[in-house]
Length: 247
Image (cartoon, rainbow, N blue to C red; front, side, top):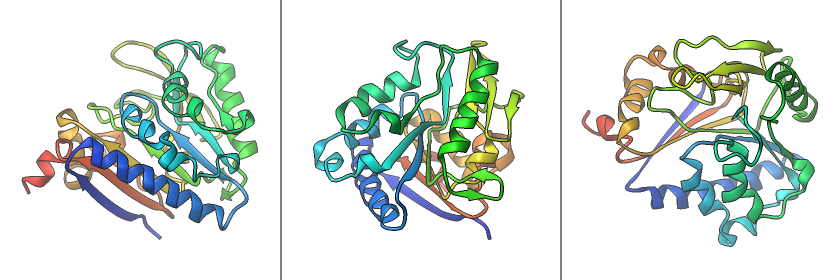
């Protein structure tokens, strides 16, 4: 069975964020009709400021059963949790601090710990908490991804080898531009998810968006995401989809 692929284009980021917030509410409600708890991995970076901030609005968030949702992180810089560069800090500011969610439901990557130790601890945390398995791997209910202008996803960069991989779940990575060390979930675990959603905005994502949908999928890590038994969906604003719209 291959991926079911959905593609959605929005006129602007406001329209995209409103669609996403309602999608999140509806999809969580549907999943929770079938399961006691659900497991979602969020991305950091600039994009969450757009759509997670909208999700935090009580119009959407008050109708979500956060006590039954476990939040994980797709990657993290090796910095303390309150560092301006921390993905946890970003997501905590725009969403987690504004909703009522049990502390034990938030599974952050501890960027203040030695990477070789944290990659194993975090991999085990995923392994021991994400109850549903496909094969030997945990199956996330939903993974939300941004796309870097270089085509990277999570902290999986072009031509950068992942180190200290833990059971195909987590690994240590390095930003090729800054040399900064990070921890990331792997392509393998992303492709094992039930839903994978890419969200991209801005003209600097247009080339990558074109390549992963119409061009050479192997050119960028983003193009290698294709959940074998899940749904793959793209939410782009018109700037990110500019080259696609020319076709």
